[in-house]
Image 1 (cartoon, helix red, strand yellow):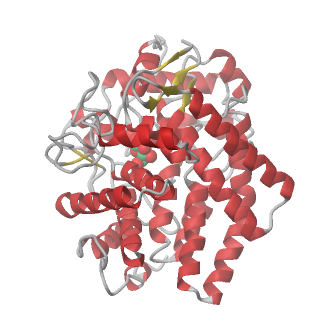
Image 2 (tube, protein in one colour; image 1 turned 60 degrees about the horizontal axis):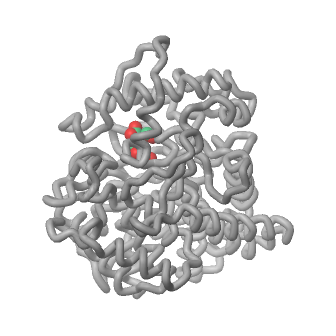
Length: 466
Ligand code: 9WN
C-alpha cells in the first residue's frame, strides 16, 4: 500500500461539529504506522497478526480515509475464511518477528488438523464477533457520501464480492454455532467473545480442569505492557491453552466439540452483534440484488436472535445474561455485554427504558467516580471488578462505539452524542490506548491501538456530518 495514501486523503478541516481537533490526524497516523501491505496490525508490538473483529473496526475507520484500502483490509481477512464459513479470529503474519505472540500458528496447527481450514493462510481455529457486515456497509455509505460515480461503482463491486462471504459466515454462526436454533451463538473459548478475561466467563472457566498433559508454553504478551496485572493471569492462560488443546483434539470439528468441550456458552454480546450485522447484510443484499431466499434466511436469523436475547433478560439486574450450556445456568454478572439487546435493536419501549436506566445508573456510566461518563467493561459494583485489568473494568473505546451506534439506531441521539464526545475527550487526553482506567482515565494496555484510532475516525466523521 502507498504509505502516504491515508494521510493524503485526510480531511483538511478537523472535527467540526464536536470532537477534538488533534485527534483526527493522529488517528490516521496510528493506522498508517500499524498498516502492512493489505491489512493492519491491531497494535505495533503486542499484536503482530491480523485479528478478525479488529480488522472490521479498522475498515470502518479507514472507510473515511481511503475506501480502497478499507476494502482491502476485509478482503485480506476473507482470504482466511474456512470452508464452513467461519472467519478465523487470527490470520497469522508469516513475517511477524519470532516469539512475538503466543499461541502462534504452529500451536494452532489448524490446516494440518482440519480440511476446512484454508491451505494458503495459517489461521487460528476460533472466531470473533461478526462486525464485518457493518464495516462493509460503512464502506458503501462512505462512498455514497462522497457521491463520485467511480467510487460508488468500486464500492458496489466490493459489496458484490463480499456478500457471499458474509452470507456464509453468518450462516455458519446461525447453524453450526446454534444447533439448538435458539437465536444465540455458542462460543467455545473466552477469546471468541473478544472480551477475554471478563468475569462473564469466570464460573465456566473455573470449572475447566487443566489436564496434566498441557504442553508447555511461554507467554510473550507480558513483555509488551508496563504492568502484567493489566493482562489476564497465568491461571487464566493455562485454561485458555487447555481449551485450545481440547479443540485441537476434536480436530476443530463442530459436532465433536459440542459433544465433549467443557466451555460451551451462549454469548449474548456476540449474538447481538450478529443480529445487527444481519441487518447490515440485508442492506448489502439489496444493493447487490441478492437471492430472495437468502434474504428470507437473514430475516429469520434477525427475528430468532432478538427472541433468543429476550429469553436471556434478567428482570432483577435489568441486563441480558450469557448462558452456560454445560452448567445450564446464566452468568449473573453485570458487564457491558449485558447491553446486548440495545445492540440487537428492535426493542419495545419498556426494554429500551430499562437498558437506558441501567446504562445511566451508578452501576455503569452514571457512576459519580468516573473520569468520563463512559461505561466500564465490568460494573464497579461487581465483586469481580478490577479497574486496571483488561476486560474486568477498564473502559474500551470500541465498546463505546458499539453502544453509541446502537443508541443512534434506537433513536437516542442525545445520549449517543454524549458518548461520542466523552470518548473523543478521553482519547484527546489519553491517546489511542487499548483501554483506560475508568476512574483516573489513565491509558492502559497497548498504546497506539488500531481499532481505537479507527473508531475515533468514525466518531469524527459523524461529527462532521451532523
Ligand atoms: C486474544 C486484538 C485482540 C482483540 C480482543 C482482545 C485481545 C487477544 C489477546 O486482543 O485478545 O485474541 O491476546 O489478548 O481481548 O478483543 O481482538 O486486539
